[in-house]
Length: 117
Image (cartoon, rainbow, N blue to C red):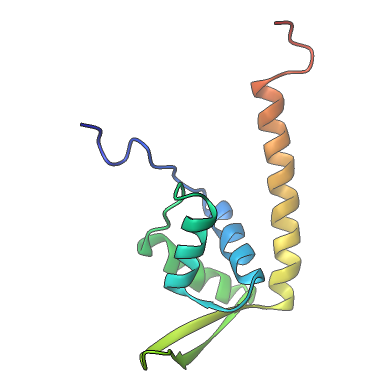
């Protein structure tokens, strides 16, 4: 039997920030909705734990990349809803650019153009 962590992909802090910002680019969302959107859009590969998500949300809010407000949900529960700010949109572009450069660099190492097969 496989240990539960063997198929798990651990996210770097900056990567999680980028994924949260991208998710909020699609519209305001509460924490559970953000986690579900990341999980579903990653084909169930990325599972963001509460212990990682909420510190990230607080950090993004301190940076003023997102803002939050309390709302009453459809089932009459109070939920904190997060929304991307203009500053957060700029940061998302920066993070996506960094991710693209990192992905290209890793791809270059995995399959060098000059390597003969």
